[in-house]
Amino acid sequence: MFMDGIERGERNVALRNMEQIAEAFGISIAELMRDI
Image 1 (cartoon, rainbow, N blue to C red):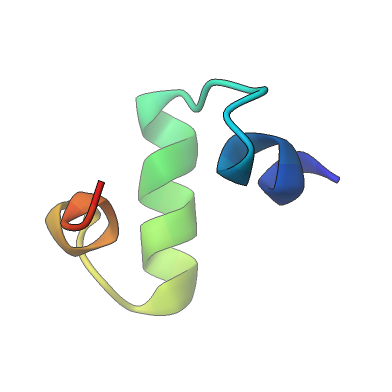
Image 2 (cartoon, one colour; image 1 turned 180 degrees about the vertical axis):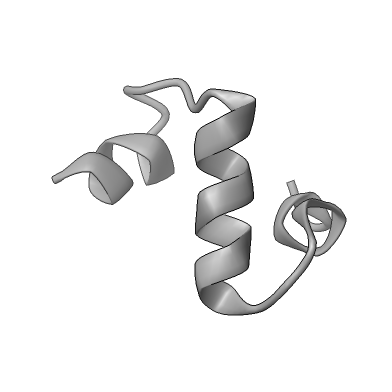
């Protein structure tokens, strides 16, 4: 699964994909990346 690969560090995420993930959660990219 795509998200699993991201969480395990096996896949990289393009900025546009990060925007879509953040939008799906109703948060900003900054909030998405805050604890990384």
